Image 1 (cartoon, helix red, strand yellow):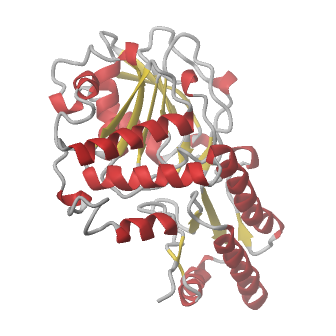
Image 2 (cartoon, one colour):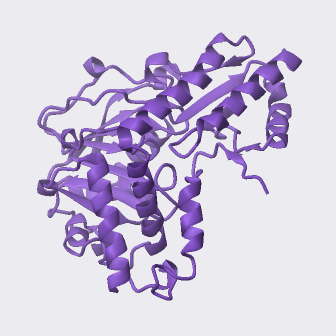
Length: 360
């Protein structure tokens, strides 16, 4: 059976070589006689998998030595609470920039633990742009400044790193982490759910500067205390072992493919191919400000929305799935993460052209 051209926003497409390797190792990992799913997280086999995964992630992102790398659970939704629990450190407020649905979720959750100052918002234009840094109203006494650096639903991406002075910058990078190089040292904390560009659902990556941990709110559960997790090598509780294993295979695949600079080159080419078609079309429209467009998540709409169902039906007949936009914004969305080959984007553009010629 042919594999689908999967444009899902997450859980998302994984590199085929990774899936094939995992399939080959399913019953017996490296002569251990066990599947990774059956291993003790305390055993030497899994500890070696975990250590290699962390080392490869550190190499890919050039993570400085004074940053902890944590393999946790709960996704970005959990981190919306875990971040203020750990990073308030005696302060009463934090700054948040509101650029869409995921920012709003972060803001709502943080309000349970501190005063939230919405330093800037793109709501005035329907979250179709990122407010320029000079418009932000930051509080120098804030515990941290939080951004969602790629809005999966709205299709916005920061192509610049905000300067927040001496206040730590925190970023939810769930849907574009590892798609391009990042200067980690400009951030106090980076977090990301794995199920978009790293691996299967169930794993959350946290990269945090070590001076920011160790002063959690008294109510913080032990499993959510970054210091306790760092001291236990992310094994205070049983980690998502199989998800860590798959993430490790993805990290190795990224290194073999040329690293993050090569991923950025491919992602620029893929997104340009699709945006170029949308921009010249009189039938489809891309709602996002050009300078702020995401390379990973590309929302678009048919000008005649009554044709949405016919469009999706035709796409499915051609093996293209998960193109329906999020229910909060409607329309269509193509998520083209690292593992989406350019041939998949070419197939989508060809279908867009065909559909427009037939229906336009």
